Amino acid sequence: MILVTGGAGFIGGNFVLDWLAQSDEPVINVDKLTYAGNLDTLASLKDDPRHLFVHAGIGDREVIGKLLAEHDVRAVVNFAAESHVDRSITGPGEFIQTNVVGTFNLLDVVRHYWGDLPADKKAAFRFLHVSTDEVYGTLSATDAPFAETNRYEPNSPYSASKAASDHLVRAWHHTYGLPVLTTNCSNNYGPYHFPEKLIPLVILNALAGKPLPIYGDGQQIRDWLYVKDHCSAIRRVLADGKVGETYNVGGWNEKANLDVVNTICGILDDIKPRADGAAYASQITYVQDRPGHDRRYAIDARKLERELGWKPAETFETGIRKTVQWYLDNEQWVGNVTSGSYREWINQQYGA
Ligand code: NAD
Ligand code: DAU
Image 1 (cartoon, rainbow, N blue to C red):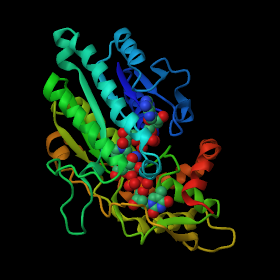
Image 2: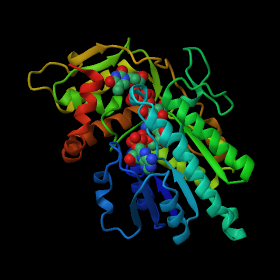
Image 3: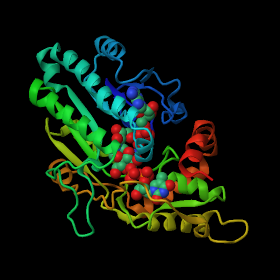
């Protein structure tokens, strides 16, 4: 079986659902259930014996050590992290604890487990660390997209903490021989995305008649990847990636934020027009920019295509339509995540 961390979050949750839809190999899912962890995402697995959910942090050496010792784990896929850049600016401490200290503890426990495996299982074992393109810093309009050879230049507390975790993973391979793989992916979107992030926030605010907040001039560029394409890339790398290597994952979908928001508004105008007939884009509101806001991210995903034959299945146009429709069809999931602490965050971040 495999052990996944952070599997109640956005990407980890999609990964667990896709994994069990495509194979019968069981999954142990270790998640601390922070504000971003949501068991509703995994509701369809409630009575599925192939899914073992464990409520624990990646820094809990005892629990993780016990799980590894008691189950025949052949791979660990580490999704668990604090993931929101804006929260890392207002409260960086948790990012250091989970992304840096937590990853260290997880790596160290896994190293001891792996070290005691018999030779055949030791050779087949993998630790896959899920990371971000933000570790490479920011691009100008004319720079080439980030390749695996770009130097690390993280600019936010979030990206610095992810960069630190990538370095730890690298060191555990170089020093101890732990068979690691690292993926650095661009911006994901799709089902089960927590609505603190741009795309789900805009869909839900639009439907609720609320302002659609655009930071700064809205011309910052992100390279969007449908979450299920990220999951398929991780499965490819886990199956055939070369130990010690990093793979950039991206959708070849560079879009300015304002264009993304206008696209969402256009889709909603089509499929769920406002009662008063006005365009959803009339709700666009420019707000104060994010401090240290990276201008452009773009991923060069050619290594993954060349070496492992991976390509995204969705274009932005197909993926964003599916995503908007998913939020319209899943009112209950949305209702549950937008209560309580979510409202506190929105008030703190966007004020009146
Ligand atoms: P998310 O915030 O939606 O989910 C994170 C999950 O990790 C939650 O379920 C949370 O409860 C859990 N978690 C947090 N701290 C934990 C801890 N100490 N121990 C165990 N579980 C803990 O994040 P996401 O968007 O799904 O991102 C998953 C991973 O992918 C992260 O490592 C992130 O850096 C990386 N990533 C995200 C994107 C993106 O666009 N969302 C892109 C590239 C890489
Ligand atoms: O690039 C990969 C990264 O993408 C991941 O590592 C992060 O975990 C993930 O959160 C995401 O980071 P971003 O900061 O790019 O995503 P976010 O959705 O927060 O913002 C996308 C862009 O939209 C960014 O330029 C900031 C802008 N934005 C965001 C919000 C929440 C707005 O203009 N208004 C908003 O209200």
